[in-house]
Image (cartoon, rainbow, N blue to C red):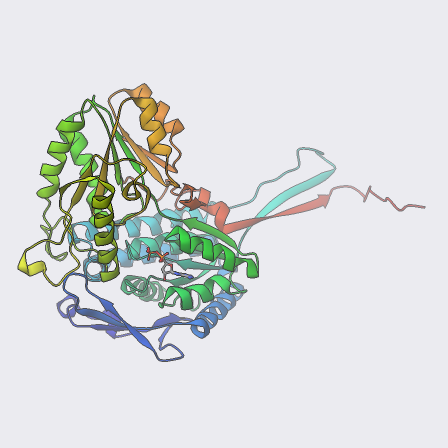
Length: 504
Ligand code: ADP
């Protein structure tokens, strides 16, 4: 536990992390560990206890006991106070958390710093929600005869399985609402980026959250992740990751018919009409595509540009993409860091080759940057393919890297057809000055979020999730209360019992 509280100046040395179960940092039952790698230079940033089935079982038992012993009966106002304390502690530790996020996931510090602030906001939002969760009376059909009312109850133990992009944000999305609704949590962070979820557990303990209410078991997907998804003592899985994994999770959930919500991948269309201000449109398209090196499920990876604007747009977009400051995530001037892992680097390289073979034009990027200072990292240049046909693999499949496909369209009808012609439906965007057209498209685009003249706006109160293979259920906002509680209907006869069917 002391290792996890090292000062900033020691952050470059490899840290040691244990599992967090029942309020304590403990080794895994097997005592196995794995290394978390800094994507900037491949150094080891942390040696982490590797949880598997038995550790997950211990965490679920601790979470169940905490649910029954204390958390489900803790008054909502008290739960809110714990969440507010966690928010304050996130803020108090923000520089260190942002730094760890940059070291582990390669997120530029200029981005990880405000994201940590956002995590505090998430806990505050859900602290406010904790006292507003309640049932309703349902006496209208037979007033005076019966009283009916619903109790809105927590589910029990919620398992959170998160990916490596935005690790603390993902951990906050899974934890804060579940705790606010009265559930206890077992969190399985991604194997590439386990540090900040464990730091969150440390802060929760510091905030006084009772033992067992939040447990964190780092480990690998097919072992720790699968054990959580299959566990009969888990009432719900909240998953973010690839749709192929999402399908497996649903299959595994059938052991006890636990509920599942899935936030999966995307191949979001960003539709740009010729009436836009070119500079603003290019800036928004860069932001939508290259933020966090393109490793965001909602990235605007398919740039659909009206043919009358196409040449001017491509020229300026490529020019600006080439100017993006790539570098060490800990440098405040860096705007694009490395990819998060070697595996991801190989995947992006593979897709660039596919794009070339498919006949798309590689207009910039396509390889690793030449700067010697970046030679050891998983860096990749901002890459733009033009003359892309929407049927191509690079336009249909999620690459999860700094690779964009620019596709030409003629009119609104064609833009809509191409925009929706994909297996995913996470996000979509439209840039135009024509307000009627913007709203028409917002209605017709098959996506859980539509951004008009903006991108990546997601707030604690805005439901975020997918259509089609981008999943089901929503993160954030009131909608989540439905996913994290269940209703019980209670009936009261207000008179003498009147339905004596078997009277003689
Ligand atoms: P990504 O490409 O974003 O890592 P994944 O779906 O592979 O997407 O991983 C997201 C999360 O799912 C990670 O925490 C990972 O460990 C976990 N995971 C991967 N495979 C499985 C599995 N078979 N069962 C349960 N969890 C899994």
